[in-house]
Image (cartoon, rainbow, N blue to C red):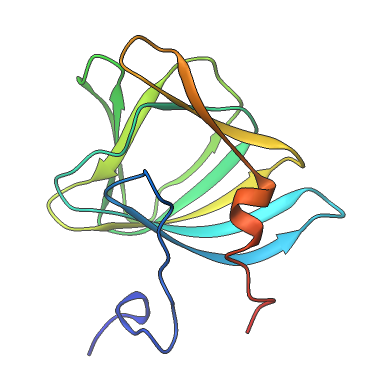
Length: 142
């Protein structure tokens, strides 16, 4: 039996242009309270772009292993399925990815404006992702 996240009738995965190895499904967008719930799928044995979190993120790894890497590429942390994490905003840049299989991670993202900064290898901000960047993926809880 396929897991719910493999069934396109249940989860319709989207991608953000310029962010490789990541797909997402916006589950809920509560702009009045500044909370966004998103399922992220991190590709197995891959890493997404270097970035930093500008707001509080609470995560729950649902499947696979959620890997976090320092800016220099060294493994920082492995979050197995079932791990709940509270991550306050941080200036520390990092990458994220899946382990031996895709990692499915539920994010509760708190904020009403800028949420993430994408960085180049010299740690210059090349893009800022805000609530609006996720809002067009939200289908109203279909």
